[in-house]
Length: 181
Image (tube, rainbow, N blue to C red; front, side, top):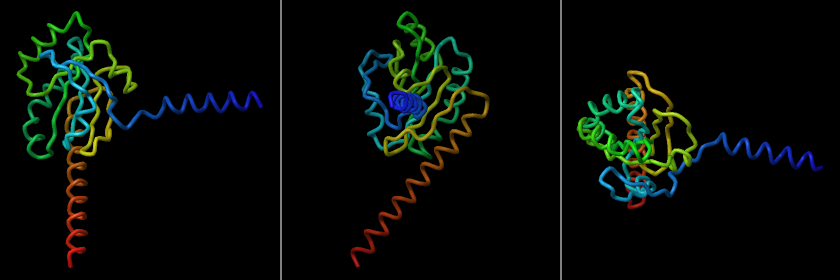
């Protein structure tokens, strides 16, 4: 009996680690201006939010964010999307983060995860790491690594989320219209 309980407990612990959470955690971090930001607030704004985890020492991370910057305005217009660049650089490198971001002219929110609290809460190891939070505040996409063109795969997901939200809105309108008759 004891072995059965231990076996079940082991399976539970292993499986709970395999299934990442679908909601953003309640973690407060600072942006590069030093303002405190509650990460879960991004889940409540009705927008699609792309979180791109990066570091100043990570060449693929910087390449990904640079390529996204080139199409970001279209994403904002076409998909009501915002990008949040989350630096996992340690406290010592925060000045490098600020100067790099300012030099790139990114229009993103830039958040500092200097103690990797958000990284640990979302249970991933390496950057670049990208996740998408849909209009309903649920994590709908995760991707580790970057090669040129991954931003277009990401854009396809943004388009799917936008289309699904539009279809749901149409269905709601049709149901409301049917009730009025």
